[in-house]
View 1: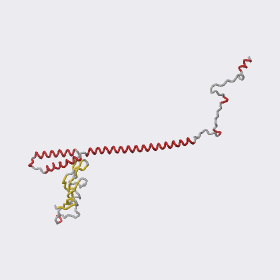
View 2: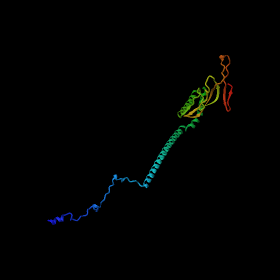
View 3: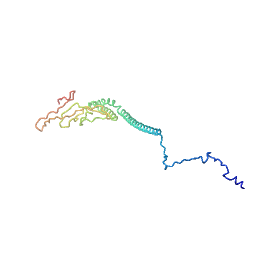
View 4: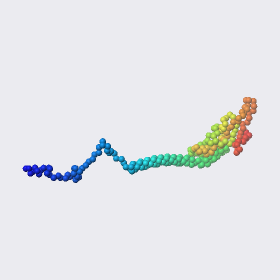
Length: 237
C-alpha cells in the first residue's frame, strides 16, 4: 500500500508541460503601470505626424475655399445665362411684334390717298362709287388697326416733340403755350414705335397783351409763323 501512495505522490510525479502557447506560467510577465506612481499612459504623436496633420488641415481649407469660389462662379454664370435667355426671348418677341413696321409704314400713304379721294369726291362720281371707296378705306384702316397701327391724337392736345412736328405757329393768348390748333397730316404709331409724326399747327403766346374791342381799340391781327431752316418766319394772315 505504501508503494502505491508513493507512486501517487505529486512531489514524486514529474511536472508535465502545460498546453496552449507552450510557455510555462513562471515565464509570463504582465506589467501594469500605476498612474499614482507618475507613469503617463498618453502617447505623444511624433513631430512628423503633427506636421502632416497641419498640412492636411491646410489642404482641406484650400479645397473648401476653392469649392466656395467654384460655387460662386457657377451661380454668376447661371444668373448671366438666365439674363441672356430673357433678353433673347424679349428680342424674339420684339422681332415678331415689329417685323411688320416697315410694311405698315408703306401702307400709310395709300391710306392718305383714300382719305384725299373721299374728301374731294363730289356728287358727280355717284353714291355707289363713293360707298365702294369708303368700304375699301374702312377695310384697310381696320386691318392696320388690327395689326397694331394707331393714330396719334393731335388736335387740342399739348405739343409733344416725340409724336408731333410743328410747321406752323399761330399767336393765341387765350390758349396755353404750344397747344395743337390743327392737324395738317395724321401721324401713326405701330404698337409703341413711331411710324410717322403728326404734322400740326401750334399756338404761342405773345408777352404783350392784345387790345380787345371792349377797351375801345382795334384788336391786332393774330400773328402766324411758319417753320424754316433758320427758325420761325412771320407770314401774313
